[in-house]
Length: 248
Ligand code: NAD
Image (cartoon, rainbow, N blue to C red; front, side, top):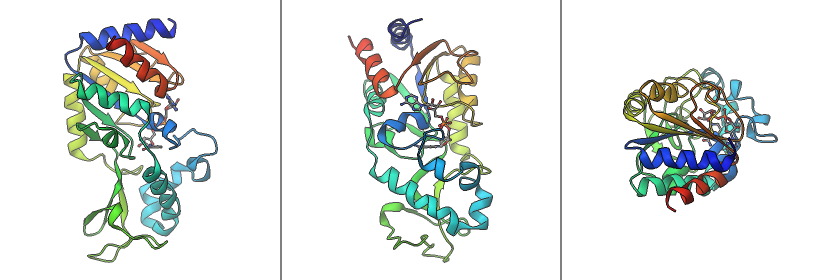
């Protein structure tokens, strides 16, 4: 199917849906300058995510992991929502998109205007202490070039993001599963759909007969199995195109 036909088919599904949800991944923020795990020359080429995004590494050597975290937080603080984020915010504003589950930790959906956002992997704009569980926003912290320490107990703090080897926040997991059970259509945007358990969300939705619309630069693990409509391309272009058709 060519891209125009795919966009029209997806628009039809969305217009007929009663409960549309979205699952987004790192790909939606690439056009905002935040690299996904595959982007050449990006953060993750310098820092192997299997090491630097693993909780065991943080526990063993937080100073080393903070070298990467300083760069990651700087990237997310400077990034701005792109047309793909804005399109999803518009869909929520028009009461078409009921909820958005994101694996991203960059806060860009919230900055674009989405209010019903389930942060599946947390948010890099908050810090937490692994020892006494004190939390604080990143903005209020003057790092002074050193890993921030907990004002209560003095331990090195960690961004409130889910590292490999950590549990998904139970509320986010439960709410996402409930949404996937309620949805009659799901937009799966810019995710390789391999990081479990986020990758199970489209399968749960599909089991409940939801239509699966997938938007990605390339085919993924779900394209040949559960995807009903695949829209190939940069989501900063294809999502606004989809909205134009929906609102035409
Ligand atoms: P991933 O890196 O595994 O996959 C990204 C997907 O996006 C790929 O399938 C790629 O083809 C696609 N993509 C890249 N640019 C695109 C574009 N412009 N338009 C359309 N598609 C595009 O990402 P994932 O599936 O989200 O899993 C990686 C994990 O890493 C997630 O759990 C996430 O928490 C974390 N992560 C988050 C960020 C962020 O917050 N922005 C960035 C990197 C990694």
